[in-house]
Length: 64
Image (tube, rainbow, N blue to C red; front, top):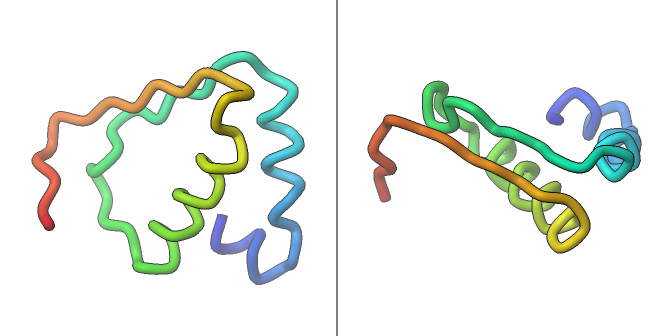
């Protein structure tokens, strides 16, 4: 997502995701997100919210 943002291709990923029924984010929290990466993920999820199903899994504790 960060690469697409720098290439100004953000909407391509959203358009591809809107063509499927389900997105599974497996192992979320396994790798650390940069602040920009976290914001991009939030933006992506807010764009597809209510349009496709999203499942997120993790076995890591979230820290605040």
